[in-house]
Every structure is written in structure tokens, then in C-alpha cells.
Length: 253
Ligand code: NDP
Image (cartoon, rainbow, N blue to C red; front, top):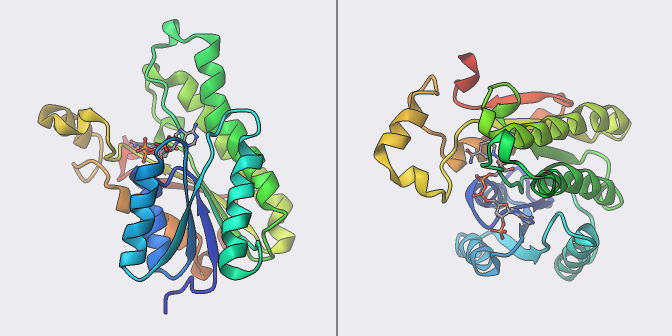
């Protein structure tokens, strides 16, 4: 029996990358996990199948964040899935992980691109938290995935870094608001972490990215998932409103 047995969790953007690794880790720890995806239904179904094969419990929920009605759609699917499996809609753990990078230089960023980055990365997590609170009992856990780029300059990702700076405000203020209910809210800031980006297939690029970390390697999705797993566990009950650097020492300079 894992330390999250009897708990329910929603991980946004869990069809790939760190979200996937986090969903798998929380399920391995015993939680019933809602594996959220935007457009990759097939990938999310594979994550669910993998979790079930390993003896865990999960179901997929789809909703394109950053579009009108996104949070409503997400919670319709989430609550239906929870009700079917547990008889109620209680949600103990929320991990706001879904996010999009910009990849556009400051001088080329359009207002539409800027709005999209903020809609997915900052606005959606706010309203997901707001809506989740109706289902979250005392003692719940909220983790928001930020980025080391809130502390490390990258002129190609100014709008993205701004959106992640906004995400970090969620932990500070919601932590204070929700402390009386024993709900913790924290930010985790990954550094460069392997995902499906083709950059990770180019050895020279991986070498250059590795050099940014004190450990001279890029992060693996599990490196971040393990940090999230700690923050949502009972062991982290005294940690709230914090910024947790999970960048492999990238922020040491
Ligand atoms: P990936 O790019 O591998 O996957 C992104 C996930 O988010 C997918 O599951 C995707 O679902 C989902 N997603 C993206 N946009 C939307 C949307 N509009 N609506 C719904 N779901 C969406 O993610 P990473 O593992 O690279 O990153 C995870 C988090 O960590 C992000 O918040 C990212 O900003 C942050 N981060 C990443 C770093 C890195 O180096 N990888 C470094 C620092 C922070 P689908 O495919 O179904 O659309």
C-alpha cells in the first residue's frame, strides 16, 4: 500500500513529459489519477493503460486549456470519472503541469501568441484551482509547475517566463488563503528537462544543455515527478507557499 492510497489526483498535461511521469509516480504511490490531456487522447490512453498494467488506477480526461469553457469541460469529465470510481467527486491532489513554451524572440512575439501563452500557462491554473477547491477537502495538495526561467535569463522566452512568474504568485497567495484548511500550495521550477522536443535527439545540443546543470546532464521527467510526489505527500505538510528549485543546480549559475 502506497502513501497516497485512498487519495485522488488530477495531473494536467499528463499525456507526455513531466506530467506523465508525475501521473505514473502518484499512481505508483497509490492515488487514483486523472490523466489530463489537451489533444493527445491516444497518448493519455497509453499512460492510463501503463498505470493499470502496473496495478495502479487512472482514467483520462480531455480539455483544451486556454479556450472558452476549458475548466468547465475539464471538471465535467473529472467529476464523472471520480464519481464512477469512488462514488464521490473528492479531489485531494491537483498538479497544474500543462504548459506551452513560446519559442519566439521578444521582437517577433505577437499579441495573439502572448495571450495564448498566458491563457494556458497562467490563467488556466488559476481557474483550475478556483474550481478544484469545491471538490478539495481539508489537507489537500496543490503543486504548480513553474520554470527555472523565472530566475535565469533567456531572451527567447520572455513571454513564457512572464507567464511562469505569474504562476509562482499562485503559491504565495493561495497558500495563505488555504492554510486554515490545511491545504498546501507550492511551486516547482524545473530546469531543462527531457521531453519530446527534437532538440533532445541532437547530441551537441544535449551536451550544451547539460552544461547548464551542476550535475552536467539534462533533467529526466522522473527527476521532477519525484519532487512533486514529496510535496503532495503527508511528509510535506509543513511546506507551503514555497518555490522549489528542481533544476539540477542550473540556478546556481
Ligand atoms: P510537454 O511539452 O512534454 O507536454 C506538455 C503537456 O501539456 C502535454 O501533456 C500537453 O497535452 C499539455 N498541454 C499543453 N498545452 C495544453 C493545452 N492548451 N491544453 C491542455 N493541455 C495542454 O511538457 P514538459 O514535460 O516539457 O513540461 C511540463 C511543464 O513543465 C510545463 O508547464 C512546462 O512549461 C514546464 N517546464 C518544462 C521544462 C522543460 O525543459 N521541459 C523546463 C521548465 C518548465 P496534449 O499533448 O494532449 O496537448
